[in-house]
Image (cartoon, rainbow over all chains, first blue to last red; front, side, top):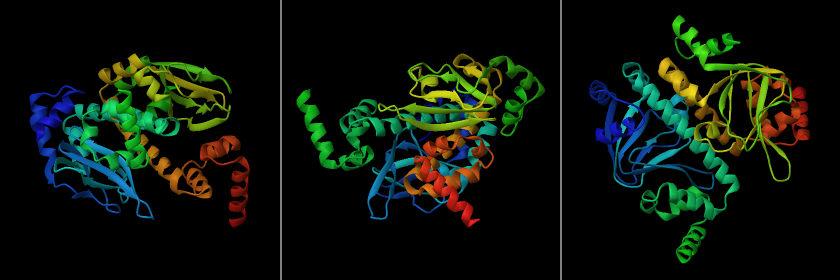
Length: 193
Length: 193
């Protein structure tokens, strides 16, 4: 389970053999079956979860009972309600598994301790967060300026393999469009090809 | 000029005397007069700017010529088009000074080098970015769920001194409301007191 994590970290920073052995002790592995929850709205998010296998999503539910997709997380992604994790306030998101999944959980205490024990993890998280800020800004910008077709093309270009694994109604919700609109866009794109 | 920066860093991490002396060489001080630009839309953002004195803002201008406030930065804040800075794509924001200001500029190269020369700066930026992610998520959430009055109360509670320094039309733009709505809210709040 740790190979995916270690190779993800090594894309960003250099780990010594000692670091690689030391870091495993800070994580708790967990299996989550399809449709099972990792976090429920209103609970405090006690862990950052690194996805070593499978596919999960964060979403919230409005007063009318409609689900709103937030993000997907698959192999090599971290998933959490980051605000709840850091501040201890109740989570506004649900996290559940779209496929049978395996995650490595890093608790709040271990998050602090791992950066003290393995200082290069500060660099790893620094790079992870700076990329995340850029992605969030782009997505925010795209949500304002792009058409539904442009949004879909951007998503499928950046994540060509994963988009086939995600149920199409969730892709539509992520893009903020109706499932029928997504079907029409995909049909048009196929014709253009 | 460096005292504000050093004390800001020391709120988050411990700096040795050697670190404090070393870090100054990575920054270029710059004075910006009121209304002067630090960055113009379409240019590449070449520096992260730490505000050691004064008040700046980032904003964009839509096709109709209307300005949309993004963020304010005053003493102890970093200001940039972070996406442009990291990726080298043209900036979508303008940055200008609301007051006569002094900033410390950290170039892209120096940003990489400072974390190699002073590794605790990775920890500093890691903490800075994790706070920034939380703030952005809260603001996004607030923009969807809060009323204009709630938004104003949240802003003035978290930044009581600074809000008096910002022209009220910019505060209104930041909150996404008309200046007249802001005046009415403030009048109502005064009556309630």
